[in-house]
Length: 424
Image (cartoon, rainbow, N blue to C red; front, top):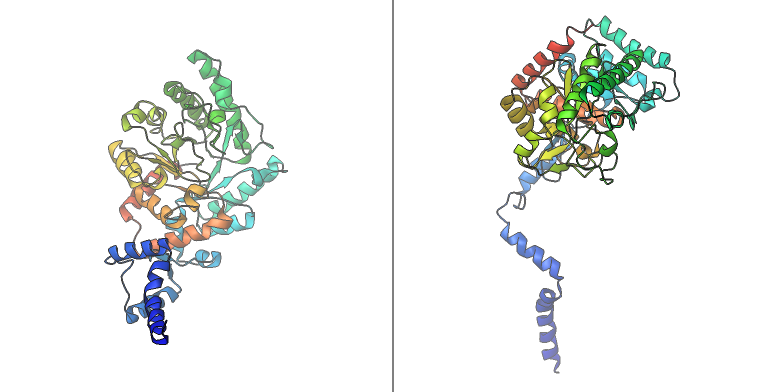
């Protein structure tokens, strides 16, 4: 080959070969990008706009996620406690928190930043009842000094595998185990009332006034061993919704005699759910009619009682809302429960420290705002040391921006005051 021809060949190779040597996935990406060029997420940004965006991201008040959505700046605990006192109190009346250090939760109570506390195994492990009660009394003393209603003191003391306060409290078998071989309502009622009376006496010893029980999820899949920590086969009362409704009603009425509120859990029911919401969100694909005639029977029969709270699970109901769990779904809370069912009882979320909330979109903070705007009364957050700052940063930012529905919040306050303002 002549020198001139060799040079020409090299030039042609330099221009042509990269098109053929480029990896297939890269060529495919370029192809898709050309079709999406009108989308704002792929649109070229002018230099001055880029500078403006960079300036916004650098502001201390907010940050942006990968999709470009502005997120509230993460506030420190000191900043949260020193925010506008009335704003903090308005937010705080909707939040129940768990804690490890008593000093941390005392600071929240003094700032009127919470409605209640959740006590669990790490708060009582290796301690005597009197010591636990002294902690609770110290928190309630602060509320009395503030001339406010008592704090909600919540516990997860179902009996059986979920007996978070045992020891030091007496351990009991689950209601489902006790009722498994009983065939008549008269005997069932005696057993349930005796069980609930014992449990109420034990809870009163440490100052609990709201128990996260009974479980009214139906035991529809007792052979399911893939539901992780949910373990519904060990916790559910029965697969029969009418037996569940009766037993749960007797239980709740008996607790009420001791001034303790019960909590029906976990709406919309976990009986058809195979995934563990401690890890990720789950979905129910049954029709609304099927749910009405089965899973929702115990809830519908009992949730209107004044001594009953309903807990919302992190479970999607595909026929109503394919994208959002019940715990912060407007379609489920506002449209179904508040409007269609005309439900005026108290609603509390399942734990917002669970993976279904913390590991998925839209994130803990935005989910908390959505829950309040949907008509939820209380947000439960068990792991306040790790997650409280993120939740409150979002709630404070939303409140400052006017993004928390004032009418929905006013209605929630009426519901809360109706129950707790008159409590001893």
